[in-house]
Image 1 (cartoon, rainbow, N blue to C red):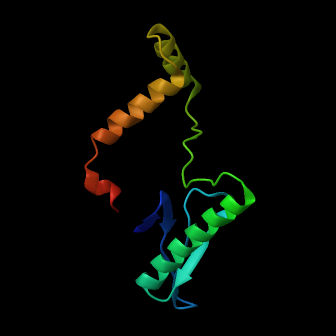
Image 2 (image 1 turned 90 degrees about the horizontal axis):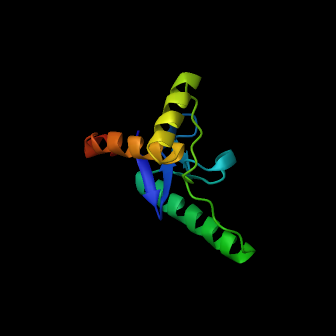
Length: 119
């Protein structure tokens, strides 16, 4: 699936056959906070940008910190045995569980061809 990007926000692209229009929502935002639509790809992207600008303006006027598409917090579920191994490794190597997982994910992502992220 293609995605839209503007000012660090990422949005989906979907099609409604019933309404004969493109639509989407900003990814990683709670409760589908920001949505947009358009008849053409250009209209969709323009409405996406306008929706982001409206949201950022609203946050500024309301003196609240805008949320980002992905805030850097990720909860994962893993078997307790794996959790224990990570904790012991981290402790024995003077690091944290968080640092170990972050470094492991970063190393894995480095091995993935960049083209895989463009989808």
